[in-house]
Length: 300
Ligand SMILES: NC(=O)c1ccc[n+]([C@@H]2O[C@H](COP(=O)([O-])OP(=O)(O)OC[C@H]3O[C@@H](n4cnc5c(N)ncnc54)[C@H](OP(=O)(O)O)[C@@H]3O)[C@@H](O)[C@H]2O)c1
Image (cartoon, rainbow, N blue to C red; front, side):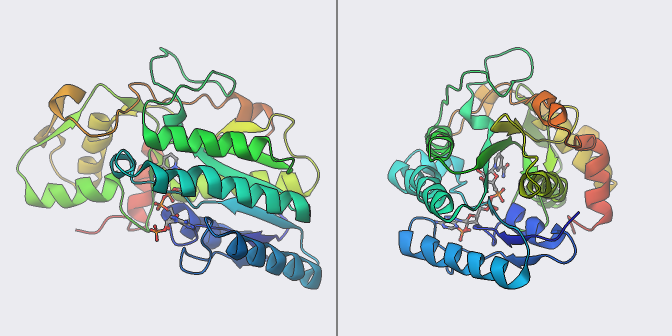
């Protein structure tokens, strides 16, 4: 794959970290954290884009932005909707507007939480969103803003992401395995665990198509780990990887584990549009988890 002049807002997060790490050889990557590039500050966005344009000119590499910045505290968002909207709704709007004016393509990352989870099968890219939480509502606002901006932009929804950098479900279960004899984990929410290193590789493959003028006609895509499970199944798999007895993980219902934000019962996202666009589907989630452990994702 050709090198890129790549800007990754949200470079301090788990996906941002892996995008920088897996960028194709020869790329010039700028993956600033929030203190350096705050997507809620227009001046900060303009400066970063102008710098990217200069980098692209000087290096001869094609410029592209992959936005990994988000307010991801799903439960906290319920009591801080303005804060969540500023980052997830308004930030992408400003970013897309500046990308449009500089003619820089944008790949924006979104979420399964834009759906209500009531569908029985996997969600297709053109299924009607109906978020049940503040987080999902603000992420959907970001999607619409990006798609209506006039920028050459794609929205890529993903779900159940875990990576080396930052906190996530795999790390939490790894910690709890060391602290508790038994663990109850919800077994009535389905989804596809997605290793952020794999997701980063997929997004960079898309970026390669985009900068070579072969970006998919459909502007909304789904990219997740292959297969599906429940949080309970995911937790048991983490125990297996740790060499612990998976029977110590017990199933429970969502009602038994109330949270401030409503979760989709079904988060499974169809990969059909991704494959139709000629992109490589991510490997099966269980295989990826084993690889993640080999890469020392969780240490006890
Ligand atoms: N994690 C998941 O399970 C999941 C599932 C579906 C979709 N997604 C989407 O995937 C993308 C990447 O998520 P992730 O898992 O990498 O989340 P993450 O680890 O929480 O990373 C998000 C990053 O955005 C930064 N950020 C917050 N406000 C910002 C602002 N105003 N300006 C610039 N950066 C800001 C955060 O910095 P601070 O830490 O300093 O606030 C953090 O480093 C997001 O779009 C998210 O919505 C994630």
